[in-house]
Amino acid sequence: MTDLGGIPVKWFPASWTLRERKQREKFQAVIHDIPEDMMMATLWMDHKSCE
Image (tube, rainbow, N blue to C red):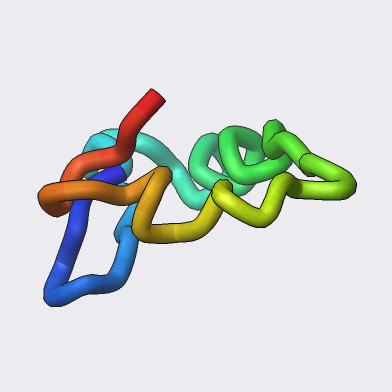
């Protein structure tokens, strides 16, 4: 993932088919009851994703 004008953007290899890209999108994580201090600014600092 990279930052494009303040928007997180996913990049995929040009050789991947649409099916391969959609398959990759299926694997996502969901966090319930997120702490108050966990915000987009905390996770996405200096235009890079953070741990």
